[in-house]
Length: 194
Image 1: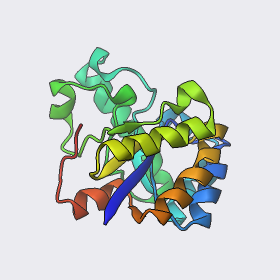
Image 2: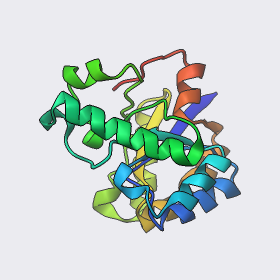
Image 3: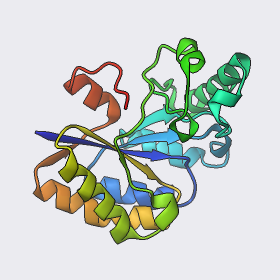
């Protein structure tokens, strides 16, 4: 079975509701790497994510470039976000995606959790066009017929709309949507890095 993990960064915001509505409609699980600074005032959304069985990962607190931070500051960013997520979901995130996908050995030493990057970038932050975003996914999947982690951002309206193109098309083509942890488990890749 061809596996695909949709991942969403930088949320949550009001637009995340639309993304969750579409995922719920198709009964699909995805992974959200959320920013600590966006957690307050969006507790309801995170609660719903959790209830729907979405996976919630740590995307740092402030979206700072981790290679420019001290070890102490990186720990603070991760811990603060972990705690905020735990306060709502009663679960600590098991996955980390460093801001911008940038990290170094220092960062790796700080954490024993899987650092999750991606192998298909929709560039949704740049195009804000749902057809364009969907095409990036399809092109990427055609290029490499392996398990795929797709990078998207739930904070954009066009991204939510693109899911109405991406999901039905991929379901018709026998793709199975999984969370990143399920992907790691099913592919026996404990540290799935690109």
